[in-house]
Length: 113
Length: 117
Image 1 (cartoon, rainbow over the protein chains, first blue to last red):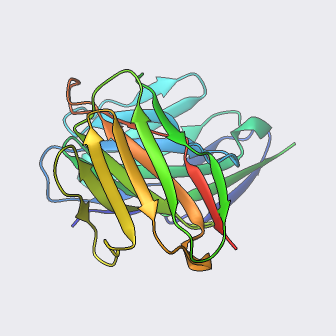
Image 2: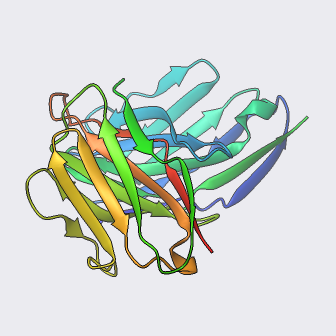
């Protein structure tokens, strides 16, 4: 069985602070994909990143960066210099390929002005 | 990326009636689509896997006679909530898998918010 754990239920920061969202996963598959999605109040999922299990390189995209560590089964997401527009629920997910996605419970991020 | 649409985006229905939700892949063919359900302030949970031309596969605890899934074409899957009750009120999201892509990328629809009164 696959499992994704997002231990942080809610995080509140002040604008311009850096914030890291944690994600730990469990799977017996040797090939798998990890994802991060943003869900604003509208509900529509916004795709942020997909990472193949064979690619452990960290990735940076603007203010966003991801740290994938297979040794600790973690795929953490950092927002640098947070902005109010970053306020949303963020989901980490595991699966892809032939599998449906297994989502974590989500982390609600509130960025205060 | 590819586009997946859902219709309607919102629906309010009375208890006991049936509601049909459509999920379409607009610019690619999807032999497999997935249906998820999200209750308020909760995560997305897989309900069923919809395969074109064959019966859907339901997750444990999901009533297949209540949530009817039809995947009659390579671009359309429908979810019908039969005899809806207030506890079926939820956000329903579909995703479609593009088998042409490396790793069979999945694209999510915008979701349908169902309210049963």
